[in-house]
Length: 419
Image 1 (spheres, rainbow, N blue to C red):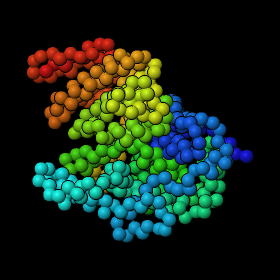
Image 2 (image 1 turned 180 degrees about the vertical axis):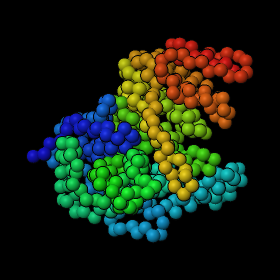
Image 3 (image 1 turned 135 degrees about the vertical axis):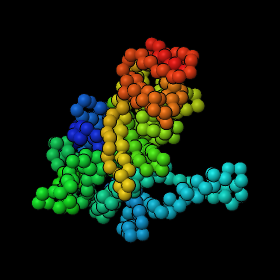
Image 4 (image 1 turned 45 degrees about the horizontal axis):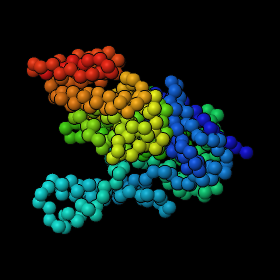
């Protein structure tokens, strides 16, 4: 009889957000097999551990719904929605709804009764921005293929392939599913770099050579992970560039990580340019982890499930944020930068006073970063320097051209800001 767990190793084989999506997708899938207890993700130097509260058996795997676990995107009229598809989304209809709501909000104060009722009735999907990026970066074709393959299988066949594939992944081997998945830069950014040449020798650009590296089951898990924890932002004057942020698990429950990722884009981290966005995202993520921890959550807020910070700092539960930048090249977008941002790890939290000290420091850092103008050449340089070295543990001096010195605490030290 097959047994799985309690710890499942996911190697960091790409060094990109693809590894994070795979670990989260695996944790999300197996969470349905647990009838009690939380699934956790433990980040190590070379791998992630998906930690289950107990060993799973084949009977446990039968609890996992035989569904894809993410929406089917009908991007245009040419896309046919097969029978049995779970959660189909008509992209054009959803986009029209978003546009109507935007126009209505632009008329604040001059809304008639019909418009007010329309705004109350029409709700934008919570995953709308994820669907936008999925469509923009052309990831919907491959995710739809896998979606169609899963819903077209008999449940017995699905569970057979599920058990076999999980056993092979645990053994460090390639799975044998035939779901026709493709490597796309949204889910596997390395798939977009270093393959195509201007004039390939004895091969065609469209010969699908790189698809030999695609493992459909692994790609499926990445699709699930994307819809759980990816945080995309549109940058540029015409919102033509995309910056994808994915929190990197340190030692955190899946439920807490999903809650953090859902809350982060709604908390005003957008800063105008990439360096400012990155800095504010790191600071805001640390703030959210403290504000929603089981021990130190505010009276008017609720803790993220399974999030404990006793004796730890934010960087112990979320080690950082994986960032991938997709630059507009006119007709398409290409991966132009990949990096990992650290979260602050100044000192452990042992008491409510420590938590309050953390929140005060984080608040001052955010006000200082927001005060820098990223459309000025001298100040954007300061933001970039802050993003690179803010968590190094030493005081950093930021000079502003004004006159008064505004000092604030930085992990027990002073960070001088000349204004």
